[in-house]
Image (cartoon, rainbow, N blue to C red):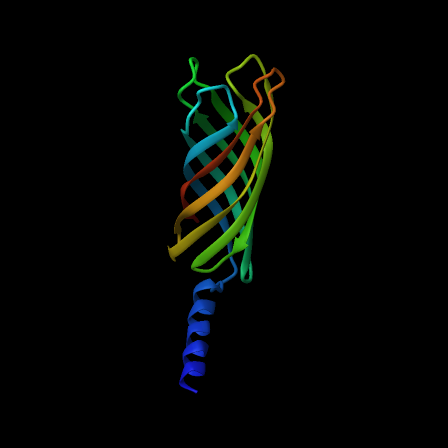
Length: 169
């Protein structure tokens, strides 16, 4: 009987942390700082840093949210003679739970520039986990698969892992 009461209390605490407290909408500003590990890159490239800025509008839909967003970012992969770099502008959406603990999925498409002769379409998709301990500020971690299909022969693919922060108004 005592174990059943503890399980019930634990379930209530987890549900309280995950559940949304109110449905609302507002502007979202975010920043991501990543490390990217390329797997379709020029020889001798190593893990490199990246940055992504996000502007979105978050719609609170009860216990979940939907966030259409645009992003701009830059990544560099040191080690090659001319280090490859990528600049991207993307549009897409993020979907997740809207409580204190916010697991989420996201996908974007747009354009990218690899520093080679051409440009091409860019895509990403991934997962994240954010924590919103105060009403307007969130922070967390994310991982994504990224690709820029350059019209030349400089197509780049990499995995990125990092941290993010956000402000919601």
